[in-house]
Image (tube, rainbow, N blue to C red):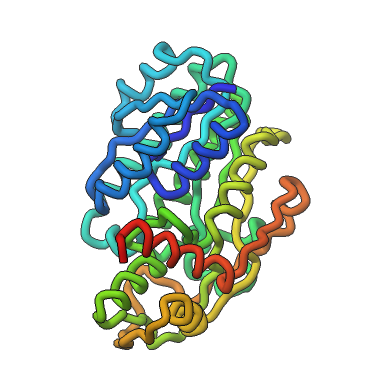
Length: 323
C-alpha cells in the first residue's frame, strides 16, 4: 500500500508512519513543520523517518489548496490517507483562532478534495478529538452522544471536520473514518501536553500549574495503543450509507489528575512544586471514552496503564534531553 500520512513530523503521525513502514507500506509523509512548538523535536522525529526505506517527505501546508491537490498527480498510487495534520491545543485557540480554521477546516477540505481525485483510494482515516464532546456531562463519552456544544474553537473545528467528511462520503462515496483521540501521551510526545510540561518543570525545579485546583480527570491514552487503533481503523474501511463512521480511541479509564501527577513524581523520583489555579477557558473537567464500538469493529484493546506508560515517557525524556 501507498499511504499519505499528514502531520508525519508530529507526535501521533511519526508513530503511525513507523508502524506502516514496519509492515512494508510506502509512506508519503507530509508536514509543514510549523512553529507551534519546538521544531527541533519535529526535526528529530523526521530524522528517524527519513533514514528509513519507503519514506518520502513532502514539506507542504495542509491548508494550502493547490499544493495539496497537486499530490493526486505527484503520487497517483496513493490508496490510503491517514490525515493527522492539525493545529492542536485548546488554549492556543483563544489567542490564534485563524490558525485553527486554516489548518483544521481548510486543511480537512483540501484532504477531502484530494481524496475524491484519487480513483484508487480505499480509505481515509482522519483525526478528530475527544474535545468535540464539549460541555457533555454524561460519562463515559459515547459516539452516539450529541456533540453540538463545543467549549473551544479547537473543538468546533474538529467537529466541523467530521461533518465535512460525512458530507463528502455522502456525495462522492469516499470511505472515511474519524478517530476521536483522548489525551495521548508517551515517548516523542508534544511539549504542550501535561506529561511533558509537568516532567520538564519537575526536572527544572519549577512549579507546575494545576488547573481547576486539581479537580480534573482525563482518559490518558498511551501512544502505542493509539497507533494500534489508527492502523486497525485504516485497515477496515468504513461501510454503510454513506461510508463514514466515527470511533473513540481512548484508554477507557479516566484518571484523576492528582493521581497522574503522583505516578509521574514516582517515575521521576522528585516531588512536584504545585501551584493550583482556576479552570482555564475552553477546558473541560473530565473526559472518559466509551470504546465499545472500536473494540467491536476494530479489535481495539488499549493495554497500557499510566503506571506503565508514564515511566516509559520519563525514560525517553531523560534520554532525549540528556537529563
